[in-house]
Length: 125
Image (cartoon, rainbow, N blue to C red; front, side, top):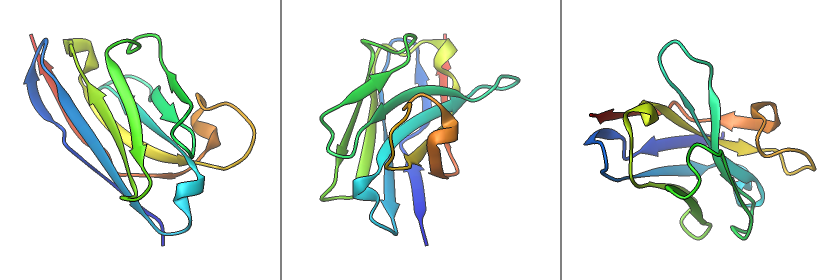
């Protein structure tokens, strides 16, 4: 059974930092790409960042490029999202997801097979 469990969310002031973690288990998810998506109230879920299976290739939404960093530790079955210089517009529920090991876009949520429950990030102004 595949499980993805996010942690590290919380309330932070604008300009602050948070590091989200996603611990995954089941199947050989170390061969899957991993991504982070977010959904703000009243808005559609949007892509934030992704990393390929080895950790050597990363992808970012323009809105977070230069502020967020995605990484993974396959020995610990964990993917991270370091978020710096947070702004109120970053407020959302952040979810991690495991991407099918197949060609295709890392940006589309349709490419992702498994999802976590999400963790709330709130940035106050």
